[in-house]
Length: 231
Image (cartoon, rainbow, N blue to C red):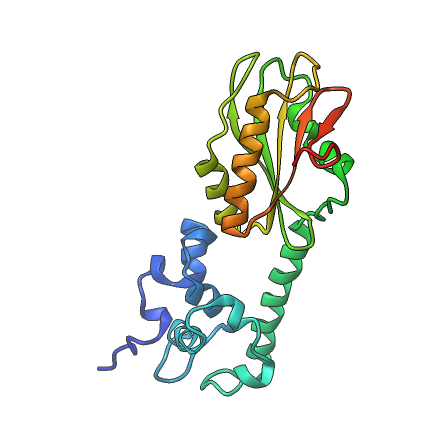
């Protein structure tokens, strides 16, 4: 009597085979090794396609970015991976890279206070209450993301320095721009605005995340602390 080799995928329960598992449970249910196994199709006489895929992943510390750096020649060194299978892996990872490139929006570069105003304008336009936002910038002064810090009443809102710099550190920002709106349309900074700006500028200096500007936003125009020499 002969028995199936337990290392062959066909001997596995149907829900554990990569292709069948994808159809039954969806692509998100598959591990990285199982997805690669689908690409290569088959393993060796003593290893399943999943086993071979696990060995490949282990060689790069299970890091898909490092896997994407391997060439067809590099991949072909693994037992069970010929040129055709290596090409399939390289092609799939290249498609993933191109998808990420298309998904990545072009970042806006801030070169002056007007750029900052236009970037934050969609978030603060027509607000009946005060809100405090920051723009997180990279080393090239490109906007990583706008972040709302707080929302308050008609005459004020709270800006917690700890929360502001928590966001800056989390996203590895190289600089920040502060902004809050005055629903009244009054562009004159209050003493509280000045004190907060000074406090945040000092904190940014210590953390090496400089505060480049603080804008007071209104629907029609703005005041820049940097332009007015108030920073």
